Image 1 (cartoon, rainbow, N blue to C red):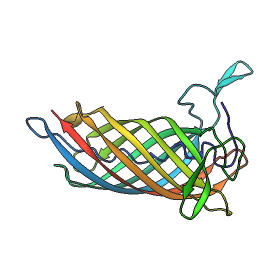
Image 2 (cartoon, rainbow, N blue to C red; image 1 turned 60 degrees about the horizontal axis):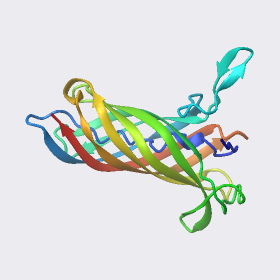
Image 3 (spheres, rainbow, N blue to C red; image 1 turned 90 degrees about the vertical axis):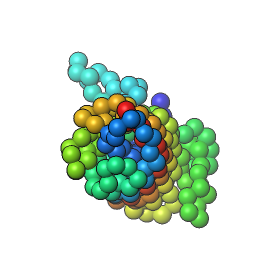
Length: 216
């Protein structure tokens, strides 16, 4: 699998980033609700190989590169029975989208539009999970990433702008959310604040989510 420096998997997370925020606590008789969320936070790269394609043996010990992103933050929920604040943590991984036109690697990475730029660099998400904790009762909701993309503007120097859209599904939780189901879409924008030559760094982001939640 191709790995490039700079932004390669730094934003594996984002995305995400963040996408966990649509969860809401249980109500009786299994109602399906439309929930919207706003959130913000920060992210950094971590050595978790979610797709299992990049770990290797070093002196007999399995080592994984820091090619996934860990995002943390908080926000506010509307539309569900549990109105108000929450916190979250999410880990995601992305890989360069094969193609041409990206300003950073025009012969090997697909281009994407971002703002007024047409030669942004496109990455596809290959995995992710997250946990949201509601402040009102401490219940946890668990989400799994199903698909998504992130586009970076590398035409100017740091900070690099990015935009992402991801799709998630609920896979249960604790307490009132033990059998939560449904899906939602997350849209994220932000900036990469710093990067080393392998794409490890830190970023800030803001996100919005909208979807449906069903709790038995």
